[in-house]
Amino acid sequence: MASGRQACRRLVRTSNVRHPSLINASPSVLARKYRRRQSQSVRPPVRAFSAMELHKSPGTRKISTIVTQRSKATTSPLQKYHTMVETGALRPDDHQTKIIQVLQDLYNRLLEYSPPSVPIVTETKSFFSQLFSRAPEPLEKVQSPRGLYLYGDVGTGKTMLMDLFYNTLPPSITHKRRVHFHAFMVDVHKRIHAAKIAMGHRGGDPIPRVARDLAEEASVLCFDEFQVTDIADAMILRRLLENLMEYGVVMVITSNRHPDELYKNGIQRSSFIPCIKLLKNQFDVTDLDSGTDYRRVPRALSHVYYDPLSEENGREVDKLFASLVSSDRSDPVIVNRELHTWGRTITVPESTSKVAKFKFEDLCGKPLSAADYIEVTKTFGTVFLLDVPKMGLDLKDKARRFITFIDACYESKTKLFVTSEVPIHHVFSDDSHSDQDVSDHVRSVVNDLGLSVDDIGVSSLFSGEEEIFAFARCCSRLVQMGSKEWAETSGHH
Image (cartoon, rainbow, N blue to C red; front, side, top):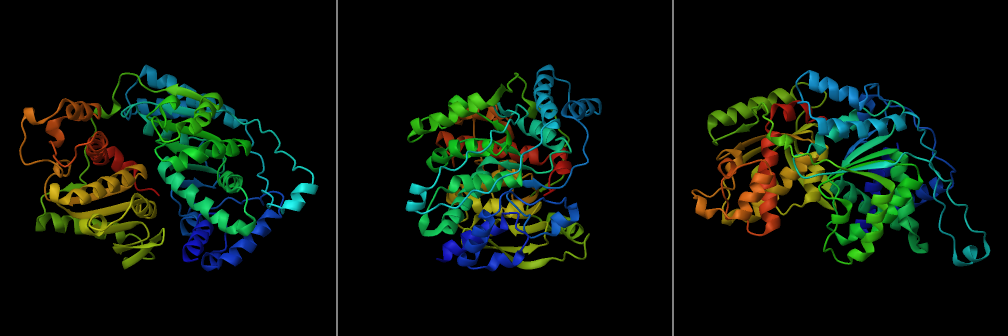
């Protein structure tokens, strides 16, 4: 019962409900609220909220970026791209210009698109009511713009393209959401669990209800790094995407893989084939590979990593933290703030509502999961991580958690400051290695990620293909997160 109550409370926190008192409500109260919502025909009009209201509202902190404010942006993707080229932020690239034109075409279609009102999903009736009642009216066919599925290897500019498109969406799109796909599915499973509790013993299909709530929150959904590795995700994705499209949601997806390559060799993959067909038939599938690795374009570095673990570096980082948290007197530092996720409590040693400071042992020395790290990075736009050690075989579990944490920071565009025993890119590296120690596979993976063995060293911590890739990708992301470009664009949750 406790887990059910927590799930229902999370549903309230992640919905558009503007009643903070419901967060601590019992499941029965939430169920009554849920049933009252079912009796409505369409959602009530949502007024535009100011940026300050959105920041203060307890119901607006989510796993992703959700905007319900009327944007003032009038620049199109193509105009924005040309501006970035003219200012030197990007280099001119013929292939990338063609991809931007694809985004521009969708932008033009969205200019003429008016998202439909989202109807309420009716409650499941009893067996006899279903037997003698007429079939429900089908949803009116929505003529929404086709979605985009952009795929390509690492280094093809997926993040930049999604940034550009999302930030130039037409002002008429007043509800939009951008989210890393893994975080989105964590959110979806929470909502499904809470919806089942709300439906009670009568049961029913939670997918249309979850899709309806998602559609009410955003008429344009942008997914970063779409991938399917979990059978629970694979089994519900087709129906979830179908329901979202029926409600008029336009989706833009980036992925490392062509739809045909998704969930390859996965359990019961045959059940996932209809989802692959849906992506190929209902989305414009576009290949981003051009032969250019955009990560290899030199970036100006920003001073966010400090080594070794000296008193001087410690004082410097303390000054940085103090300067960031002292800018707003109405948001003081709280000691041992508690975050709650999936029934667990994460203690934050020092934090304001936007900036947090942890020691390595606080985050990586405890059995935390990807969901815990997502909770941290969606709550705080800037994170200080202190005293990162050099990691050998005796710290393998901590090394894996560190990689998971860095992935969460990268995916949520978190600004990260680190103090470490050795240069941050060498925290996994063995003390010494020779060319003979480096396998062809390791060298290939590292090279594909835009690095060299000399950049990150070689680690005996990781052996399997997935582990080696995760290690090399983590190092690649740390390099990117240490750039001036990242420092200027990250941390704006």
